[in-house]
Amino acid sequence: MELFPAMPLAEWAETKETFHRFAQIVGKIRLTASNRRNHWWQVPFHPTGRGLTTRPMGGLGEQPLYAIDFDLVRHRLVVDVLDGRSAEFSLIGRSVASFHDRLFETLAGLGIRPEIWAVPFDLGDDTPFAEDTLHARYDPMLINRYWRILSQVTQLLDRFAADFAGKTSPVHHFWHTFDIAVTRFTGRVVKVSPEADPVTREAYSWEVISAGFWFGDKERPWPAFYSYTAPEPKGLEQEPLRPEQAEWLPARGSHLAVLRYDDVRASGDPVGTVLEFLDSAYRAGARLTEVDAEALSSPGGVTDPYYAKLKT
View (cartoon, rainbow, N blue to C red):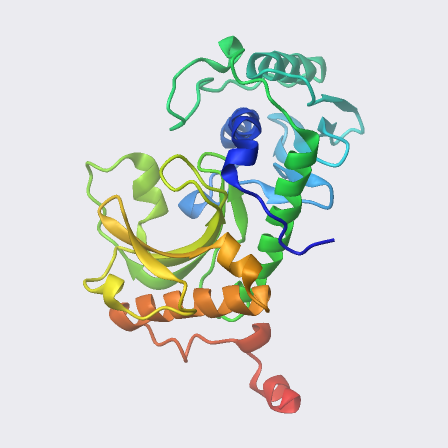
């Protein structure tokens, strides 16, 4: 099985648009049913051995403890409750409206009645999920490939995360933007403008250097690995990146370090190439924010000096 199979956006754009809305419906349930964590860490999905999970939510006597999983091997939506009850239905052949209605019927049958703002977020339209019959393409082969790529990227980002001993986020898949990311924190609090939206204020209340992967969108119609520093220090886009295919691209008033997925696929060492890129982008941000990268280093996830000495 190929480590990083081809995934051109044009090949699965309709399927991606449909599944992205499926994910937002489930994600909004996760948002309303989970305990709030700093920087919105409670919100994203995590990959599993068969697809994606919300992780357990609810409980503590307020509502049933349950989890919602996308099984992207069997192409089923699965709801599991702590008391052993379970219900599921097929994802294949469904419009967004059909998925929305069947999911809420399934949850109600289990005694779960979440309330969400049932319209898409930042997807170019505001058609309520319950009325969206336009988005109805679900290609099982392409969705399975998306999940397999996501799973490999998760492991790669987790390996990158291991080399940093400071505060770092989990590796998680954001259902609103459909990217997967891991974030390193410098430890500095940022004064975010009161005029910024509440999502941005919480996400960027501390200085961060973030790394991740997206599958492409209308603005950048190709999958790629990326990194950014926020707030962006002056001159970041002038810092060197590795490998030579990597580049800085303007993005909403700041800059993204970008390495295209197809360049990674064409390299002789895809894993090494991505790690080299992410490290170069991190060190660019660290230099300009005056982070002591060496003091916060934990090669291979090791901070114990005795063990590190044994390894050498």
